[in-house]
Image 1 (spheres, helix red, strand yellow):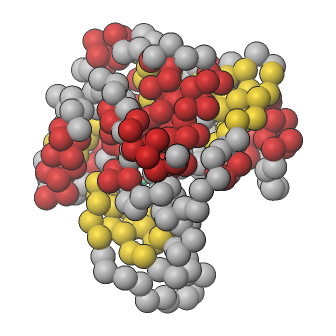
Image 2 (cartoon, helix red, strand yellow):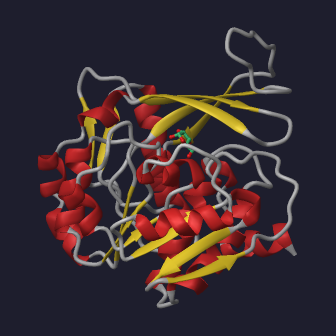
Length: 295
Ligand code: RIB
């Protein structure tokens, strides 16, 4: 895992504020998060052996995040502490229907370099799966993709502001965008339903694409075939980190030798179970919790 770790500052609100609007919310909660750390913890809770490569701030948030990862057994040897720099922070509003809006201040995550990743080359070379996202600099993501010995999964989140380098997409084995990220990557400016998702995913220069579709589950595009994997029907409490747990579970499935469609079947269950509990890392389920929350 090469990625970000954020301290999530979370407030529950009735509805997400509109531009220019102020809304009153509940008490502030401080929760371990960040797409990289969430995906690392998600995979670890499902039983994978996980190492995290990235940077924390040298503040209290950084200490809290390191402890959270280590409690879940994630190897933090290559998670560096950056002197004089604040940790990444995410400001999150969670609405009554479980939807959220997030603003990230990257802090130490923006200091992850290609050299940091190179220092962990042996870990990447031996990993069965390397999971990547876009909350750390593209230079670091590219270094990781080129050093990875196993399957490279890229979750292109948050949606990139500029086109991703062709060399990065070429090094990715499985791309896992949501509908917004897929539209951005494909240069499409319109609504993305199931049919449109299949069309756009086919246009991307990746051998396999798994599009996450929220309540509709996921769409797996591999070798020219499109397979829709529906989600269990749930009433979400908090959708934060549902995409991260999907990615962690997809990696877990691949590590256990499942094919991509069966890995996606497992991942939609894990993602749906994640929405039934609040907060990023606190909501990430073990296999037993997936069963107990859904069945
Ligand atoms: O995907 C959810 C995560 O996005 C949050 O934990 C927040 O830190 C942001 O990175």
